[in-house]
Image (cartoon, rainbow, N blue to C red; front, side, top):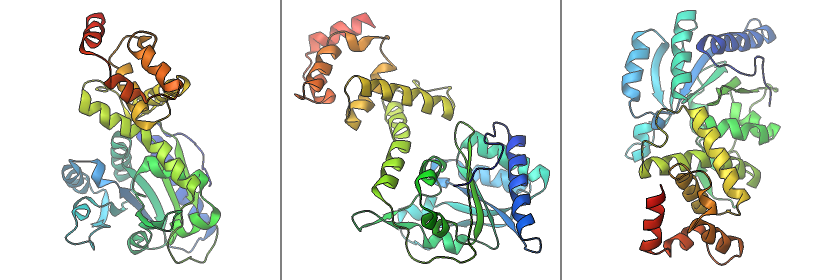
Length: 305
């Protein structure tokens, strides 16, 4: 994987400068080539995408039509919210508008390509898992690819890029990751994921799974926090849960939710301390141990809160 300076882009203008520098570096390698800048948007993570699309189009951000990369999956539910690809106007005004959207919504990545990469992206959307089965590759999710790229082989990256010379993504905390084409040929066939790839994706997405579960319990617990703050907080709570002996994902999710609702140090008091002892002794999961707590014990907890 290749990173281009600056490593971080915290503001729209910093991200614009990074993109312009990256495009300029690609142009200098092949002076006579005609490069195009595209944005890839995770529509499924943005319920009000249609409204954003209208606003961005009205401000002249896009060149040509917006392409739904699942538009060939007619009749399937996922086709309605497939990743959207669009060529981007490269004026300063258009780029500022787009990068402001990208930073505020955390749903976009950028490609510099010789030609429209939509067909290529459709061809790589299914990957081969370690057991030989097929799975949908959600390459439109910025947090997924930011975690995955450092662990991909040069062959995987080359197949992923296809006609793209560069693919860049900004994660929720502002770090910019990029992969750059190193060869002129293009590979065919499905990308094969290793167990290491799967584990990296699982680890990267787990805080967001926890965040979704927490919002179901109480939507105010994470209110007012940006993506970076949420990821940092939940990773800290997950790490704390691990240090207490919690390994199962449901146990860690429950611990994170409780830690946002109960006083600091709650895990040292009844009934949580006893539940953790059962976990460490291998007698129960945290979830099961708390399921066995009596109503009187829970009443005592509520009186302390």
